[in-house]
Image (cartoon, rainbow, N blue to C red; front, side):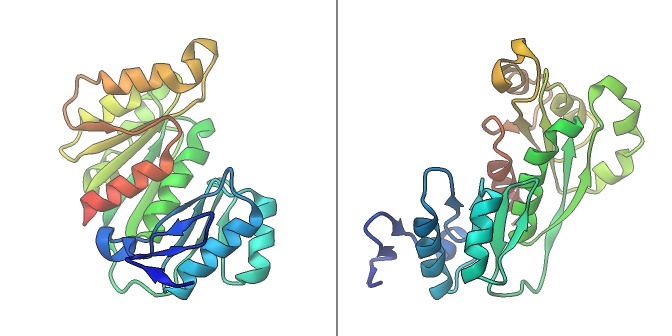
Length: 222
C-alpha cells in the first residue's frame, strides 16, 4: 500500500507507520470491532514496515486465525494480547513492578505486564496482595522499593494504590478494575478512590486499562 505522509491508507484504516519513530512504539491494534480480515491486513502493513505488533483484547479464536499468517505471533490468554517484535531489543529499560490487589485483577495486570515487556521494560509481578491482608504487601517491600515505577491494579474499593504510594518514593500508576459487587458500579468506586488518593504521586488510567498503564509507565521509564 502506498505511503501517504507517514501512514498507509487501507480504506478501512489509515495505518500510522510513522508512530514508532514519533512516539517510540508502533501503532497498537485494538481488536474489538474489527473483522479478522481487517486485523490481518493492518498487521501485514505494520510488519511490512518493520513495526512491532501488539494486538489488545484479542480473542483466542482470532489469534488462531492470525497465527496461520504470522507463525511467530505469540499470545497471552490471560491478558488477551497478541504480540510480535521483528527486532530484538538490545537493552531493557528499568524495573517496573506490576501489583494486583486480588487474583480477579490479574487479567488486567497481565495486560499491563505484557505491554511493558514488549516495549522493552524489566517487569516483576506481585499478585494478590490487597489491603484485606496488608502483611502480604509489607513482606515484599524490598522488591517494591527497587522499582523505577509501580503499577497497582485493584478493583473493589481500589485502596491499594494509596497504600503503596505512601510507602515509596517512585511514581504509582493506578488501574481501577471492574471487579467487585454491585456498589462497585463496574469499577467506578475504585476509579473514584484512586482519583481521590491522599498520597501524592498517583496517576490514574481508565477502568480495566492495563495497556494504558503499561504504555504510560514505559514512557516514564525512558
